[in-house]
Image (cartoon, rainbow, N blue to C red):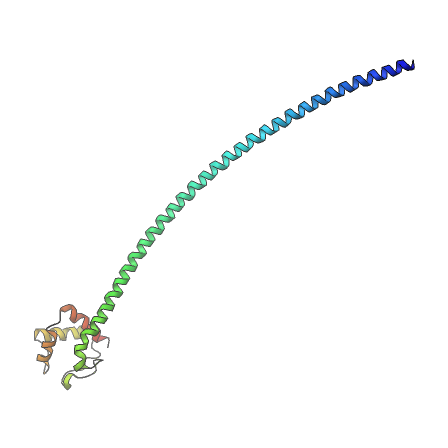
Length: 179
């Protein structure tokens, strides 16, 4: 009987161990299948995320390019506008500087009689022209040139202004008015 019980226990154990082996193989196969399914899901989700990132990156890139072009156009327009303003101001400054230089150069002929600051009566006979406004000076110079203005110094002044153009008289008058 002891032998019989031993054989029964042995058979029971062998049968149990083969069930356990089979169950273990089934669990192992299930784990492998689930792992493969999870791996496939991860790959698919990663691909979807990658596609979304690429698409969003392209959209952002397009927006950046468009905004950059708009900014570039605005910068170019503003730069051209500023350049025009600068050119105009430079031209204005140039004209003023030329007039001042030209006025000073033209006055050098006058300075011998009227003084360097126009505060002398020319040859002791004329009016002092310092303090006159440009309009009054231009009127006198045009009058000397036409022979319709002047007293004792009329003939001397007529010879001096005969060489001056209307623009020269304007420049010279502006210069003298600022002395």
